[in-house]
Length: 290
View 1 (cartoon, helix red, strand yellow):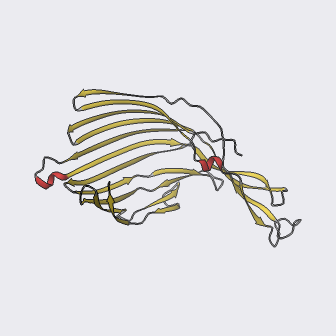
View 2 (tube, helix red, strand yellow; view 1 turned 120 degrees about the vertical axis):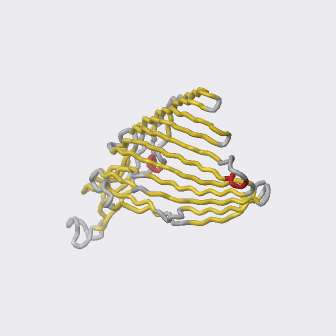
View 3 (cartoon, one colour; view 1 turned 180 degrees about the vertical axis):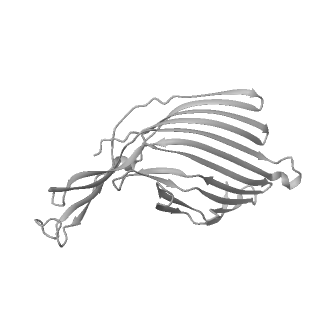
């Protein structure tokens, strides 16, 4: 049985909004949030790997088929939960019944991000006798993080255009944030550009999403602290829905039309770490609403 730490937390929240004009609002918000760590990280037991003594033997005092401690992985039931104090201020202008211009700023004080570490520990061989030490990978409580950012959005439908053209619209948003996490600091830019058409029985949507360099995590499995980043990348998706009647619609979706992938690197852009690949995909179906 694993004795996971127990705790009681107070999570206050407050929101206040001011009507600057009938179509303009200024909002302030504060809240504290909390989330448990991944149960796999909390509950994973010690998993030990062994290696044969070999020929020539690593330990001459033991037979060649003796199983020696090689390495291990372990969870940590004493990981602290994610705790965050969040502050937001935003301004919104509803300049038509179908439009909004929005600008916001946020500040998040996050405590205890977990981090992966590799420790050198002495563990028993398969026969229960401790003879040597080796690497044990685990996760521990790391430092906190301060996240600051700005976000802007513009959304409208061109209802003033004549006839079928009035179904066109757009949604543009941009986010800038800076953060520090376990000693790693960086800035990130993200934007999304959506062109849509919604008129009568037809709904069409074309969306492009882009992000700048992103800090992913810190790795210490090679007895060195290395920061892992994702390179800048963008993705183009599309969807179409046709309403046959009030209950049935035909749906078509395409994801990653540019066939982009998400490469990661270690410290420097030319130091390859991994590729996260999600190929171009197409979906077609029928949606039924009762």
